[in-house]
Amino acid sequence: MPSPSSAKGARAEALAAREVEGEGFRILERNVRTRHGELDLVAEERGVLVFVEVRSTRDQGFGGPLVTVDRGKQQRVIRAAREYLGGHPELALREMRFDVVGVSYEPELEVTIVRNAFDTGGW
Image (cartoon, rainbow, N blue to C red; front, side):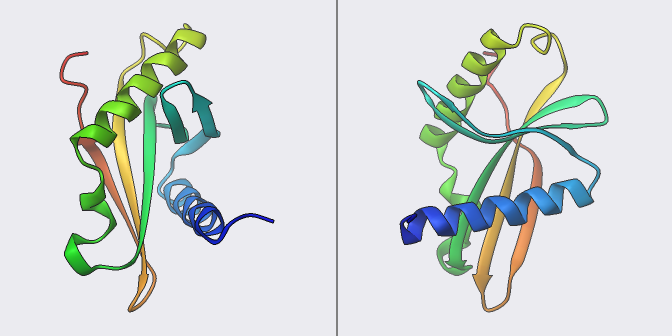
């Protein structure tokens, strides 16, 4: 039986996937595990490869879920994306970006997509 936090994370990822698909994204993979962490969603939007980080919080207090993607988390996602691309050389030359989807449950369900939320710093 999944823990309450992993169940909450799975629900947020399902909501995020539905939201980005509704915006025209095509999901290529979910929950990709690497040595550097997990990539929540790997998707494509109009030919652009998109690594999507999903964050959730109970409410919008203290800035909501989007502010939880600090520089350290960004670096872990970037390292995981590099590793992913190492295993998928056919994707390595494509235009890419990093998006964040925030899911807040209270006072009502709110799902927010932030395209190009952070960059690689020229990796």
